[in-house]
Image (cartoon, rainbow, N blue to C red):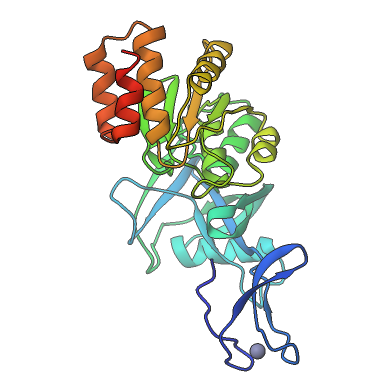
Length: 315
Ligand SMILES: [Zn+2]
């Protein structure tokens, strides 16, 4: 959602309105006509090769172990993204560089950016700019890509050079709300965003089971399209939160059986329905001891009377 509240042209409070088939923040005054289109912002990113290794840098605002590529906004006067990325490398690392190759465009939806990524070859002595506080050098093939934004560019350059990319760095994954890992192959959470689904695919999820209603909190109206676009199998089993049924649970068990051996992500709105169904499935179908399954259930929530009774009637 936009942080703008007032029309920048006439200062009237902005309102949501339908423009070009999308809800957008716009000025209610037709004579003014202002629409906040909120288009993605182009960002240039550099995989900087220096003496045969790749420079990763840490922004002063980031947590201690988080290193990433050199990135920056295009400036109004940059004649071309290539010169923009070389300018950023010089500003942030104090290095003169030249373009090795264009790697690709990468949407970074969470930040509403489109990343334009280059391989840059640089020489000289590193002299960090004001925004960065630390840097390190790593051979390209050893960088663990992160499942978002520029991480995909790292992975693509590794593939292009004939390396087998290391698995995605899970610690960099933005996890959906109420995330709970039952095992490496059974992951659960509340409703993810479209961007979070991409991250889930990047860490190896193959199928998604959704127990939420289309009207549940944070539901994505086009979740089936999003998952199809990502090549993930989708099982939608809407379960009424205040009236779960035997039939719902049997359908859930059938979906779990269909995905046996695959990495499955199960979600609802807040991981409550899911944690209860997964608990029952583990105890009744997977032979998991009750106390172990219960620990995972209680880590998410303490079932309310409806769900406590649903569980008690079955185990
Ligand atoms: Zn206006």
